[in-house]
Image (cartoon, rainbow, N blue to C red):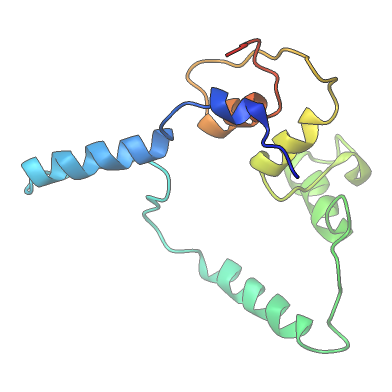
Length: 146
C-alpha cells in the first residue's frame, strides 16, 4: 500500500489565490459599481499578441505533419530560441548553451528540491509566491515538525 506523504499535513489550510478570489468576490458583491484592478492569478487584461498566436498556430499545424513533427522537445529548450535570447536579450554576453528554457517556475522548483538532501532546510522571502513555500513543505524542507 502506498503511504501518504506526511508533509501534506504541514500545508496551510487555504491557497492564497483562492482567498484573494473570495475577498474580491465579496468586495464586488458589496460594491457592485466599484472599478477594481485585480492583480490576482488569472486576471490577465490583454489578449495574446497576434504574432504569438500565429506562431503557436504554425507550430501546431507543423506538428500535424510528418515533416514538421518534432516529438519531445530539446531538454534545454530549442537551440534557435536559446540563440535568439543570447543575442537579443544578453547581447551575446553569454553563450546560448548557458541558457536553459524551462516550462515554468513550479516544475523548476520541484526539480531543485531533488538537488538537496532530505532534511535540508530552506529560507524564502516574505511575501512569496505560495507555490514556492508549498513545494518546499511537501518536500519536507520546512524545519517544522508538526
